[in-house]
Length: 225
Image: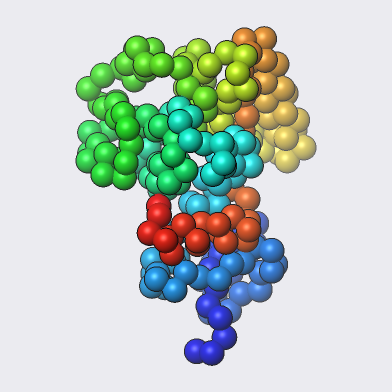
C-alpha cells in the first residue's frame, strides 16, 4: 500500500466503526506509528484521546509541567487508566493508582509509584495517609468526589477530573434539553462548592484529536508509553 497509513477513532456520534471505508475530518486523523501493527494501532486512539482530553485539555497537564506533580488515577486498571499511567510516567509525574486485586500486577508493571488495592482496604482511608495531589483522574464515578476532593492540594490550582458524569443518564431519562439543563446545574453546583475549598471540579469527555494522536504517536515510536 503506497498511501500513508493513519490511525483515528470514530466519534460515537458518527457512523462507520465497522465499515471498510470511512470518512473523517482531517483534524481527527494522524499518521499511524510504523512500529505498531494494525491491531495494536486500533486499540489505542479512543482511550488515548479520552485520557488526553482528561489530563491535558481539562486537567492542564503536559510534558513541560508534569514532572514531580502528584496524580491519583482512581480506577487505574482499565484502558484509560492504564494509558494514563504510562503517559504521566513518560512526562515525569508521580502516579498513585487504585484498582482491585486482579489489576495490581498490571498497574505496577506500567510504572505506578504507589498502588492501593481497593479489594482489601478502604481506598479513601489509605489515600488520606498520603501527600495531597495536584490532580485526580476519576474513572469510577459514584460517590468518589464526596471523599476525593479533600485529597487535593488547596489553593494550588489542583483539579478533580471525572470521566463519569451524569450527562448521558440524565439525557436518557429526562430527554435532551432537560437532561442537559439538569447536568449543567449539577456541574455548576459542584464546581462552585469546590472553589470555596480552593480546588477545581471538572468533567471530561472523549474528544477526537489528531494533534493529540501526533504527540502520542511520537511517544509510541520512541518506546513510550
